[in-house]
Length: 173
Image (tube, rainbow, N blue to C red; front, side, top):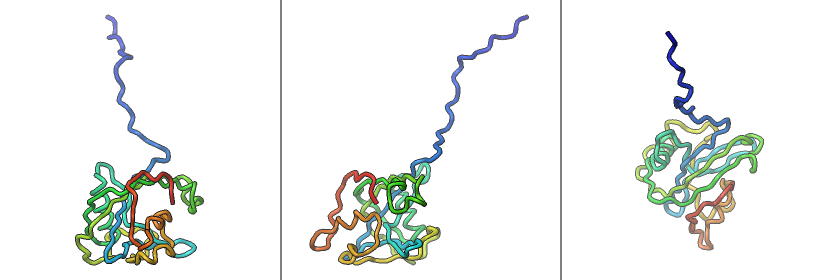
C-alpha cells in the first residue's frame, strides 16, 4: 500500500504584516475658542513646547474616534470632529528631534473639532509621558510660541485668524 500523495501545492496562510519600523497613524484636533488655540504642553531638555491634542490610532478604530479618545485621555475633554483639515507626515530623522526620533515615521490627520464638554480639563486618564499641562494659546501669540509643527504658525493671516489649508502637507515639523 502506497502512502497518500503529498500536496505541496496547497495554499499557505499569509503571515501577518510585520514591519521592523511601522508607520504610525495619528489624529489631532484643532480646537479654537475665543481666538485661542487649545494645545498640549510637552517638555524636553530645552524646555516646554506645544502641540495639538491627539495621538495614535488603535487597530480597528476610525480616525474620528481616535481624536475623540485621545482628547479625552490627554486632557479630559470631549470633542466632536467636523472637518478634516490636512494630512502631514513626520519622518523623525529629518527634523529637530532626529536623535530621539530617527526611526519614527508618523502620518497625522488633523481635524477641526468643536469642544463639546470641557469637563475637568487638564486631567485626562492617560497623559503622554512628556506632557506637563495644557494651554489656550492666544492666536496673536502663536507665532512667538515653540509650537510643532512650526508650519502651523504660517496658517495665521494678518488679522491673527487661522486659515488652514485642506491639503496633504508632506513631511513637515
